[in-house]
Image (tube, rainbow, N blue to C red; front, top):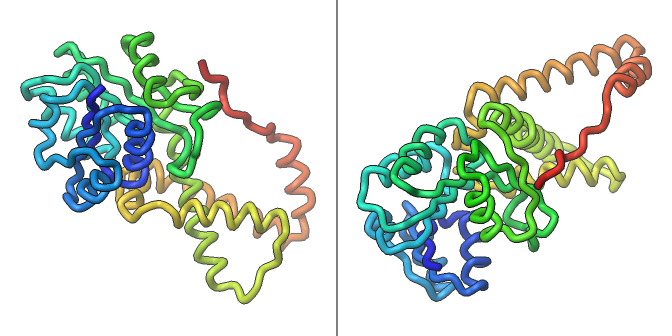
Length: 267
């Protein structure tokens, strides 16, 4: 299969290496031409300057770009001469893409809005989770996603539930990770406790992202900031309980009210 991959950052590079290893023919495009050229030299495939011309030569288009860029590309592709028969988007938000996806579907393109719930350090997709958002042709879209991510478990969601969940599961955790990284950078010494290893892990995940990730809507939206403000207010309540000598009581009440959340079953 000939795949046009748009976006040669960390996640795009992750997809490119796996698709190339499985024998697919790749056309690589990135708004930074050097990123596409460097990846094409590594993998022995073709870097292209014109994504729309390349789309006419592709069987499938894979978008690994920020969500607003994905929206622009999908709307433009829907108005162009189509050569490809399927498109997969892997951005972290989906609400802005729903209408653009329908435009492409109206032209006979199979569109899968997929959100891999793992990062580019993942070695195997077996047993991972991927959100499948606003499916229309469920069977063909799921077949398409699994062709890219073999062994992943799919979670079907509407875009509203998905994007609300992202504001906590992605945005909030990265905000906390940045705050932890900033705090630890000012701490004279730390000990290798279990909790510190977890804290360092979250900080490392946050710092491993590219700058463009933090400029994307997933981190700059009002819902993302609101989630972090709720967390800050929770921190203030914890501090107030400590200052009032009620932290043990606070812990007991919270422990009794909270149930551990496990990932939803995928299909």
